[in-house]
Length: 430
Image (cartoon, rainbow, N blue to C red; front, side):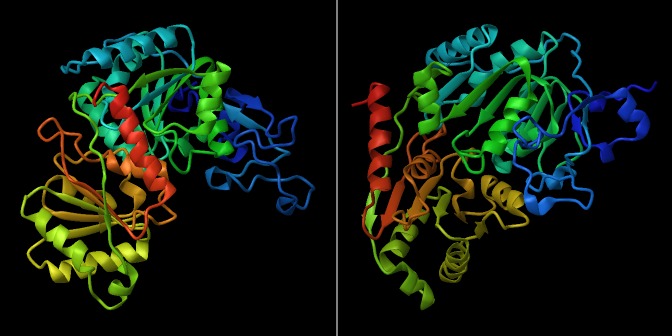
């Protein structure tokens, strides 16, 4: 029998396997006792009824059709060879080392953990020892995130610091290959079953993971029965806080950035009539003056706008107005988003206009950030804290300019500023 190692720990529908493969696999009922889909835990919809009376799941149809009258199949995960996987030459701060040691201890105790650390605290590096401790003993680890951009950034860093192949999985990635270390979007975890000894979910408060029962279920099913889940975030959620209070999660808190400098506080700037100016093909003079002043510093500038159409129009206007600048625009609908973001990182693009797609999980050294229409309803306090966290992440420039342009302050703006102040206070800054 030819060994199908890329199938280990994976979940399949009947149609995804040959008859011979199905005989080699273990089977599972596709329908739970609660009459839900085993793979995604969604209810079978009455409208998704087949002529023979069976149902199929519409919620996870893109991953292959799950039918209530057909079994699902999986190949049990197997252990990997023991190894020495980590070759990172960096050094953790005392604060980071405390979190890293506590996390390793929690994993040893099979304790689910929430790492609640400010933006720029160095969460990724703090995970390294925990990840290596599992892999080196022959275990399997997955670092998952709701955002493709975050997964790609994680993948690049892990490639540099771990001496083993890494499988990157998202909607447009190369096919999965079996390896002890996987980086994946949370949706991709629906394709696994009891595969990982450790699953770490980065940016756990981000859309589409937050408040998504399908993705919570995906994580639960992807981890082994005796495996451990670790949640990473800079902005906790009510649900996570409740689990901490109930003792279901152990919270590890780090309010200090890796370089030891405080979080940059946003400065509110009142302006008005942005939409009216854009409709006239102009930029609000106060905003334009601030952009022109910032450009004299030579530092890259990241501008956030709340809506795709508005951001696109603003980027075009700005390019017409500042002909000497190279201006890019990215949103969830930008086909070559990754190339544009990399162009900004490499300083080929001097001003990048973005929607909230870049609010988290990306690092641009020495960047300044302007949030335009920070009062917009699409900006909640968490997204504003995350956006603010793009500034001052670099040891070369732990400060930076952070402006919230608003047409009347909101609870979200005030709460975000209050949270940043509180985190600085917890870290020992006045």
